[in-house]
Length: 177
Image (cartoon, rainbow, N blue to C red; front, side, top):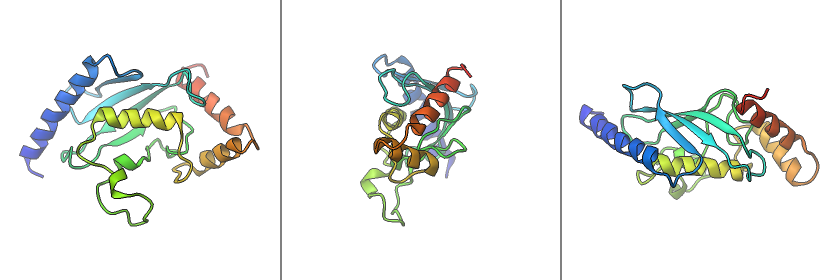
């Protein structure tokens, strides 16, 4: 891509970061740059509400990396250590959520085009969707099969292992373990 599109992406990201840092109506989300000279890499802290059934009270740090073609193409979000035990987060920390998948045809046929990335998405809408995933994990198309299986067993009343693993993850996110 040309430097013009990269410059346009940088300008848009500067405005969006400033808006997120000054908007007091976005609870549970804190954003900043990983390094002062790179607008394309944000450090994000998601502070999950105590009312959240499984992840309540957890603080989860992630890196949101934007491509130079943003907003035409989606960013990537990778959770940092400790990585949440979650059906939609790969064991290496990468987040799997439809809105971060490129705006192209889903060859597996699982996702509709309307569920995938669109330039109308913003960092705010992305992070609010991530918080929503903590509230209601999707076990239908898992990135972490073990977490999805344990969540299904818990929902069926067969086990409390999912809750146990998540509570440990929350404690680690708070530096308690």
